[in-house]
Length: 371
Ligand SMILES: O=C(O)CCC(=O)C1=CC=C[C@@H](O)[C@@H]1C(=O)O
Ligand SMILES: [Mg+2]
Image (cartoon, rainbow, N blue to C red; front, side):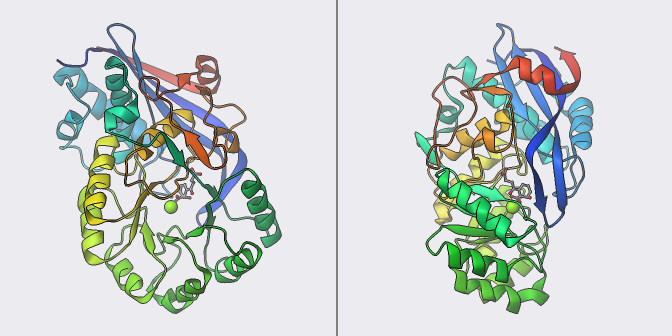
């Protein structure tokens, strides 16, 4: 039986991060994003959240391209063809090249609606087994090493165990050596966001002395081959993020030896169905995965938590507490990590209620599509 969607609302929101976020690409404080709401014939509401940023620094997608692709190419086919299961969307959208983050918004809303109609949690609908998940914190580049050490101290006191530190040329080996000297036993990883090339192999090999869990995406955002050459030269496990857009990419990266870990981001790979396919393949191959973050608001955080309940998510993800990002989130209750652990909600769908007042407060535009 098809899921009888009666209306879709596409909201554009703008929220201010509590703390500016700096990576090798730059610093930003305001987060623009989309929330898509799919409503069925009895009033069930499924929600999806976009992760593309306002400018194309992380990938070629932006908030604007996501809105365009959703409004002009993705919503109509659902209206005309009907969906029985969220997995059907991959075939329905297969003629649309790329635009994974746009596809993920509507796919996430339909996964949420599908689970709510079955009165089961999204985690259960995905086949998740973990009742609680471990998360860490991702720290942007700080003005000074002292600021970084202070921030790490604060997060460890909050109970987070794994700390992810952004690096770039000029803010890498020496900084991480100081961090390791202050925190000799702390689970630590570095995220380079493609700031290096194969010319930097000898420099990057110095990281091997620091007992890092991994180095995330050291080379080009669209590379798999050079990462294989780098991994062959380094002991530290390489984790790929930006390079992996699909199960096919994950298979090629693992077969080539380009990485030993994969950061799965639901939006980057086009949604929960492809995320699950990548997870299942990595489980067969014995490759650990974890759930990366995109500075999401509560709907996106809830989707990340549900995905992370799958068994091969064996490393702490980036889905820290809402309060680390937002003065006020758009869900009730907010996401709360205690000692680095999040209890997975067992309510239907994403498991968190939408705070309609907050949603309206941060909404700058809404488009409605009646089915
Ligand atoms: O806290 C989070 O949501 C993780 C943020 C984070 O580390 C990233 C978000 C987006 C792009 C990058 O800067 C980085 C990442 O690559 O994982
Ligand atoms: Mg990353």
